[in-house]
Image (cartoon, rainbow, N blue to C red; front, top):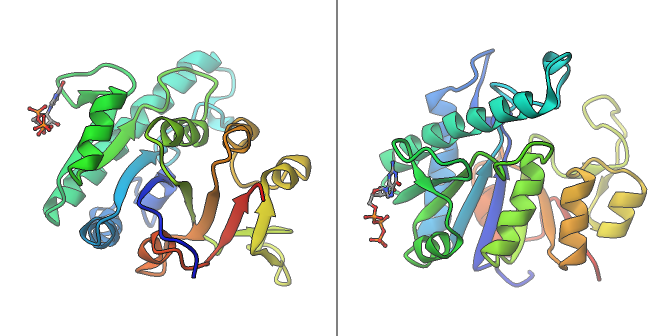
Length: 237
Ligand code: GTP
């Protein structure tokens, strides 16, 4: 077993918050909160970047014809909705949770202040980073890499609906092969769809590992932070 991770940045896509056509399903968000409680209770510090694709994504065909900056601003607001849903679910299971937004909306949540975020983490509060980076043309994957570096996380945990990174799409090809280990360069050069190129470059340039894993088996987040090798480990050896 590898070293456990004391502080992690977990990237959750918005699609993980809903079911059966609903953008947000409280039971589904509640089960994510249960997993998170297990992780925080075992002493790990967790920051989360949430996506917004279950509600609106700037860089999607649905936004075709729109000004990209306006569409991305809508996507940022979608991430705030998801952040509030996750905060509610986490508080219901007794987790101290703070939402910090890259876009000021003080009536709803705290502004993002790096030092304050780190202090929350030291106090074992879960910190949810909302509104991406507050700038258009940057994905929430890039926000995850950026926030991970700022809070000095030991790794980015990229939660997905499959077991990790495959050579071909495992939902289309039955004989897809799971990569256990990859280096950042290979991900970029082969265009493997782990995170977008900006996010991967940021991680590569700063020697930040990424672990791509399946969120659905209950207990997987804990396994990853405890150093169990599940999913795909992306690093620069
Ligand atoms: P400490 O300073 O470590 O005690 O942290 P704290 O977050 O408990 O204290 P603070 O008094 O800063 O915050 C108390 C509550 O108000 C927390 O739930 C914060 O998330 C919330 N809060 C703080 N600043 C803002 C803000 O600008 N807007 C909103 N909506 N809530 C805020």
